[in-house]
Image 1: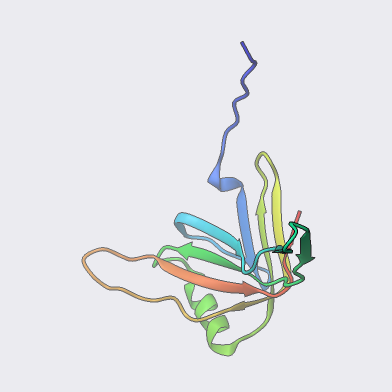
Image 2: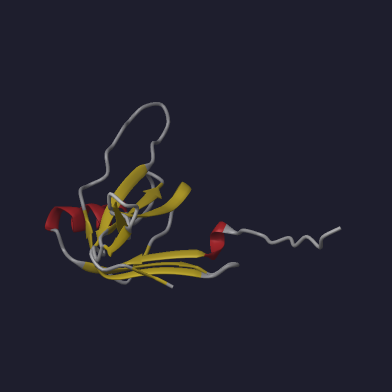
Length: 134
C-alpha cells in the first residue's frame, strides 16, 4: 500500500495587496487568477511537422471577491475610477507556497452592485500587465 500524504489548506494563509494596501473582508471565493492568452501556439505542416511559437503576452486577470462590507471596496472603486496603475501581490503561504506578482495592475471597473434582502459580494477584476508566478 502506498504511503498517502495529508495536507491542510487554510484560506488564512492567503494575502493580497494592491498598491501596498492589504485586502480584507473576502467572501467565499477569495482570488482567482487566469492568464489572458495561451503561453504557446502550435502550427502543423502538411507533412506533420510541428512549429511551436512562444507567446510573449504577459497579460493576466485576477478576480477578487469581497464582502459588501469590506473596508477596501471604496479603495478598489477609486482605483477603477482613476485608472491608477499599482503593484499587485497574491501570496499563498500554505503548502505549496505560491506567489503571483505584477508591478503594474489596473482595476478594470468598479464592482457591480446588487441590493436585496441579503448583502451581495463585490467582484473586482484587475488586469495585470506583467505578471510573474513563483
